Length: 147
Image (cartoon, rainbow, N blue to C red):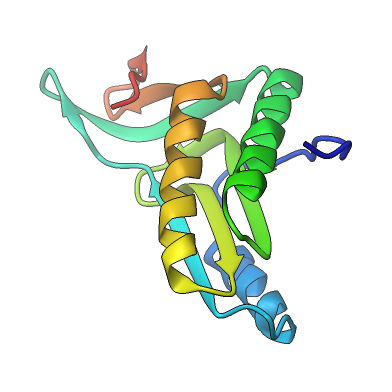
């Protein structure tokens, strides 16, 4: 593992399509890359006990979560031949249909990006202390359970 300091991966509110597109655009100059893979987590309008989710309010133990994101990043770079990796997660309220998680990996070879992305997303869901409160259309709420 490297001695790099953990980065802050959190963004206020939803992650915009402009931000995602610009992130992809910035990699065109990196000519050793042969493949990219992207995971976009989007808030669903789930129906739970007759109520429909309208948004999720994300909170986190930020220092601990950033450290976990860093550990996942370092483990992925050790395990896979990656050129780049970027992780961004929302904090605050994200409405149905908006993006709350953006993971972007690049490598010289395509097979690597598929394996790496699955490893990273599963590790995020299992290990990172980010919490979502589901907000319903009737102004009630409940804590989200990851599936």
